[in-house]
Length: 569
Image (cartoon, rainbow, N blue to C red):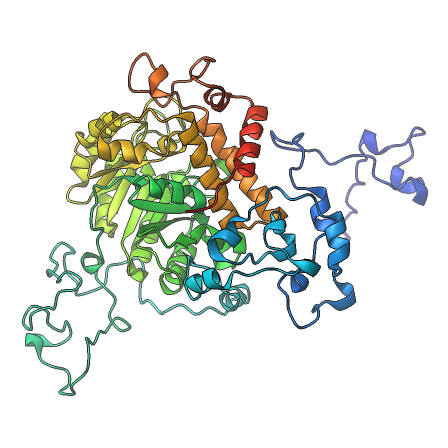
């Protein structure tokens, strides 16, 4: 056949031509260097990097820090320091005279790298250990749901095996209506012989005449029905919402101390969890004081969400798993997750049914009123969510387009609460006082979830339980910041990296705390969450400083909180 004609010559852009019209590619090797710079994108493109430059350059090798008997695995190729004297010569000055880890646990695992090392270093930079205090904590697990190296290796190599599930998108055959559920005995009570029968044998016949010690279960063979899963003991308790960036473990400890009965971890992306990313698994960590704790997952596809639910069901300890269908962030929405699931009903159904099938704990869902501002669709979706098997729904009374502008639509939340019955529905939005909480409970919801209100005033849980306005002093608020600093050093570490993380999240939290107006200065009670007051003078210098919108004043508060961190009681 005829030969095809050659494609047209590539057009050369004007910026690629030299002064004499010659292409830069033909101008010689010395002129091949690119002259165009990569365009910086994003609103924070001019923001300086907050990471200390000296940290990576003069970092001590972990083999030396942890006192390993063996030599460094990397040998001469290791880019960290191995000479303690050289490290100490370049190390920044200590930030205080007392180390919270040493005073709490009797030992600081960070040794010479601790930024409070003078409290526990002896001669020759030897790490001092308080043996009596250390023995009290020996064998105790303060934080659960850690990612083990073995599990991380399995996830990275894709060798983690899930239990086989027949069909995740349809209900199991033979289960019948989920509302027809046998009454199970409370924990600690012995069931009567005729009360619980084996589901596989008619008439409750005994499968074997062999005598056994203790109860025998078939958990590994028969999955729990939705109605047989463990329910929350008190659904009407104040619920601390999942908070992006600020809902970390130290902050949850603060809220727990002020009366938050139910806490939830930060939103975790299911694909990152399945890949074994340490930073994502850190969002699942649970402090031992969190007695009712759940995790929140975000994803756009049924297969990954179901696999992730099965992974968490086998590896961590949680009381419930929440699906985030309310995240308005563009990065999540454009990938089909968050609020986008409200418009993808088929995927949404498969995700809920699949996760509910593999989980042994209740599955909850958090949604918004809809995607568009004046088009509410939650009332249409909630009956379907109940049918798919979810144990509870939380409704934020705003759409995705509204984000956090205007007030939450509690009349619509009340309408949805009637539609959701008998499934519990929690309301969320604009709760900043016990009066707001009481008004919300009168709308017919099963409970309330608190988000920004806890960031602005974490003692809100105490106000709700005691039904009063707490005119908290500036010194008491400052003590809260010092406690958060101590909790942060315990959680993220007392070395340079841990100190920088604690500083970062403390400053992030202070951007919300400055919105609080002291009760003694208000003309009308209570304060509304979207009110931004004009500049005002506090009753003392510290109260004025805490009301400042200037980040320089937040840094002053941060420095004082770090220096004056008290010894833990």
